[in-house]
Image (spheres, rainbow over the protein chains, first blue to last red):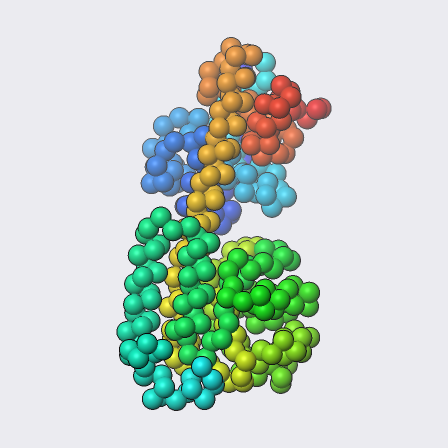
Length: 84
Length: 248
């Protein structure tokens, strides 16, 4: 069972965050991502993101910036599972 | 070097070894650039930069690098204990040219602290230590962290145009060194976080018989539910075996 959460797109969320590409990439790497900086930039702009896993890692990387600012998770996720 | 020396063109033409001053600065900068590429620790490199500042910048008697993080002021490199004391005065008074350079401007000059109106409390205490003029260069400015290279002199009006032009070159080297150090710190923290999240995914995969991708999704759901970062959720799971939920 899985669902998609409402929220900003990756591109809009990234713009709102003010994160540089280097900052976004470092956050993405820190949560387990392994795509290159250029790939992350493309995926975040909606170009060639291969699957919901990559999408959700970038979403989480951006959302953690908002968490640092005391906000919630404004960027939406795709096909997230429910706890069994 | 006295204030009069620093403003004397004949005195500025030669450095302490009798070589043209510009050649001395160029040599120092190229040595610093090489050290940045070599296996030199960041701390050692910053100490070399402040040492070069007092030998190469006309008028500079003392030098130090100040870091401002939130309300904390620290001095990772200094040529003298007095520099650390001045940093402490800025912390205590919440004012001073280093804080201005760090927070607002690229370069801040105070020609005579005895008549300085911008930071009166700081200036009074610094004059008591025998420092009469200061020159500060911004190294970097983040959202909450700032850095500055600060030069101090025991005479008034010790810093001239040459001081600014040479000082800004040293400051750019210091800024690059500190940026490299911060990148390294960020990568180390990222590696630590990756490892922890990997362990947490392994625990969930085993527990619920799900793939790594699905385990990541469970961590994301937990992060959303408790409004905490993935690393914190993973840390809690690895430490206690419990996956945080809204009712945890």
